[in-house]
Each structure stands twice: as C-alpha cells, then as structure tokens.
Image (cartoon, rainbow, N blue to C red; front, top):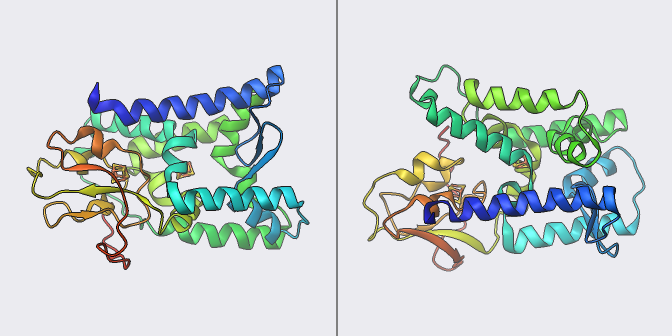
Length: 276
Ligand code: SF4
Ligand code: SF4
C-alpha cells in the first residue's frame, strides 16, 4: 500500500473537491462552491483560475475585484508552495490521463516504437495561442473547449457532448502520444509550470541510496524532470514536475522524497533536456 500512498491521497483530494462542487450545486453546501475556474470557500474567500482570468482580460472583460483577488490567491499558493500540484492534486482531467497512462503500461503500448515526437514546450505556445485567440474573438477561448471545465461542470451539472473531448484525450494519450495532453499540450499545465517555477515543495533525490532501478523514470509523467537520476543528489528543479509523488511512491530505496527547496544548493537555471 505504501507504493500508492501519494496516489491514494491525490485521488481523495481530486474526488473530494469534485464532491464539494457537486454538493454546492445539488444541496447548497458552501464549503467550496462554483467551478474550478471560479469558486469560493464558505462564500467568502474567492479562488480564480489565473489562466482563465488572463484570457478574460485579453478578451477585454472588466473583472470584479473578487475575481482578480481570487487569481492572486491561487497564483501565490501554487507559486510559493505547490508548484504544479494543481495538476496532480486538483485537476480532474489528471484522473483521465493517468488512467490512459496506466492502461498504456498494462497493454505494453510503451514498448512499441514511437512514430511521432512532439515538443513538451508546445503547451507554452498553446498559452500564447489561447490568449491571442481570446484577444481577437473577445471570448475566453480555452475556457470554451477546456476539458478541465467540461469534466468539472459535467460532474456538477451533467455531461453533454463535451464528454467526447475527454474520451478523445484518453484515446490520444493511450494510443498516440504518452502523456500527450498533460505533458505536452495543456496550456493550463503550462501556466502552472510558470507560476510554480520557484516554489518551495520539491522532490529531492539522494544518489547514495539510488540503485538505478529506474522505477521512478518509468512512472513519472514528466520524465525529463528526473534528469539527475544516476548523476547527482539534487532536488527536481524543472518546473514541469507535478509534485504527484509517484516517483516517491515507487522508490524502494529511499532515494526520493519530498523536501523544501534549498535555493543555495540547487542552481536556479534549468537545463532543458526534452525527453518524451
Ligand atoms: S496539464 Fe492540464 S489537464 Fe492535465 S492535469 Fe494539468 S491542468 Fe489538468
Ligand atoms: S518527478 Fe516525481 S513528483 Fe515530479 S512529476 Fe515525476 S513522478 Fe511526479
């Protein structure tokens, strides 16, 4: 069970949040109401998706102080503490893409030689594209097609045709590109990578304990961030790490664990080793 500790905790977190959103709509609960894009705790503390806010601003919307404050709160939380933890602990689509990844491994699809290569930096271009389209159309463009919104709203209000996009992402990740959506395309994941570039919570590697079994690299959805394995003791410094804890879960050698980032020890410059 220890090999699944963080996975179980993440699923509890993701499902509990969906349950609270559902309960707010169905039963009037106020602990967490709204949607992932814009919600509030106890009807008082606003929480807004910073990327959704950026799109609305690019589209020319005039936003309330609450919405802007909510985006600042979220950006500060992930910027200081969580990094890209939004993806692995909050976002419901992570359950879909993790499911596809799990099935890939079970069906040995990973072993089939890859035919396509896509840069993991595509997600950063997607941010620019989404903002440009929002500016041109006057609509928060990614919000309209976002699978995160579709899944979140589907649980709260019921699913429509948009559920097809979730199926498409599952099939894409399963058969076409490993970690295709979350690891390459999703602009919200890119935004959280940028926000969390200097966050405190990091996975730390102790090379003295490492037996080079490579279980961590097999399971990691952003394998390029583990570029220190087999080389040196160091914390994960690349911002695409989702703090999912799967590498910690599967490491039987006590070579990986969560730690607070040591800014004096780890260089802040990131070497971009794109491994898909
Ligand atoms: S990359 Fe996007 S879809 Fe995937 S977990 Fe992060 S925000 Fe959600
Ligand atoms: S390094 Fe570990 S915590 Fe970070 S994304 Fe990979 S498996 Fe998850």
